[in-house]
Image (cartoon, rainbow, N blue to C red; front, side, top):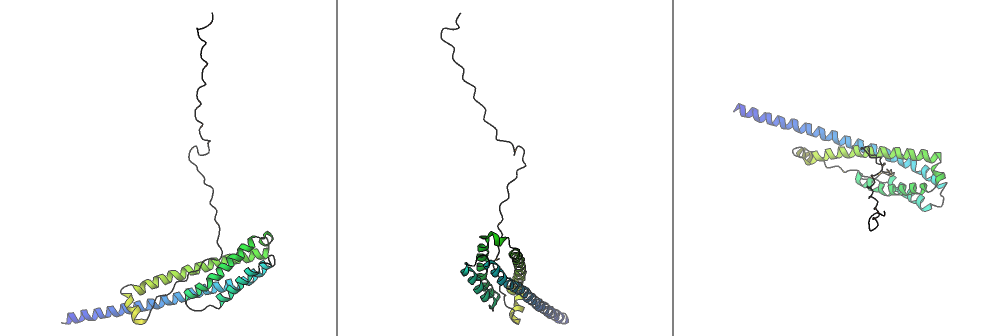
Length: 217
């Protein structure tokens, strides 16, 4: 009887230890997700700060592109004021990304603008910010994916249900700048790769028929 009691107590103790460990890991993962999203927000606000200077620089060379400038300004204001879940904030970034792409397309039509040092510096800072946003986004989504897997999986889903751990939302946005990668020329180092193609053999020249009656004496 004592052996059975000890076995039961041991199982209860193991269950408690598992529950404590699972709970603490959920808390750690949730805090990591929040910190990761805070990093995304920091990089997004850095992009917000770059946009007004970028717009004014382009306006100096393309003042008649009024609709493009107004679209960027409206989209930036909407993105700055967006609140709510990560998915809702990501949705607010969509129009801003589209407007920024259009602004950069406009800039491509003005060679003098593309040679402007201020514009080149802003463009480089924007590209660096885009890289940081995408890096932070991937890190955040990787943590959300692992956290959601534990929320859904047995037996950790029991602890998640008991203590109110719910699935987190992913954060998906497109980069504002896209690099055009041209296909590199193909190099072939196989034997005879650089030699001209072989010419077909020439047909032998036709011989003239001999005159009738044989050779003349």
